Amino acid sequence: MHAPQQAFNQNPGYAANPPGYAGALPAGWAEATDAQGKTYYYKTDGSQHTQYEFPQAAPPAQAAPPAHAQPGNLPAGWAEAKDPQGKTYYYKTDGSQHTQYELPTA
Figure (spheres, rainbow, N blue to C red):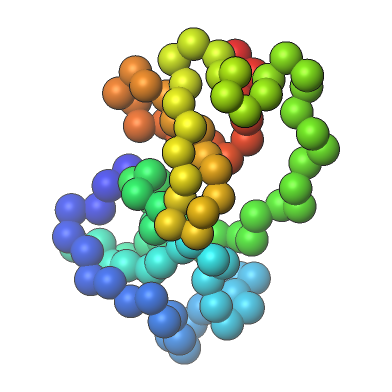
């Protein structure tokens, strides 16, 4: 989803914070307001991922991926890139703008 107009605020501190609000957004997230004044959150990694729910911190790292899915040996239709923090992520090359940090298996 893409909000039509963005009023950026990377330091949230409103009186009515969402459930689970711990005082700061997880790394890689920012806050904005849509044209109707509703707060939403978006990833700052260029993936264009947005959501209205307050983002939760990333889950702990997973175990190593299966042997058939190794960096540099990606399934057809996938590519690898680095986010601004230097973390590797993967994206589909079909124009869908789908991105993920987990190594794709198919």
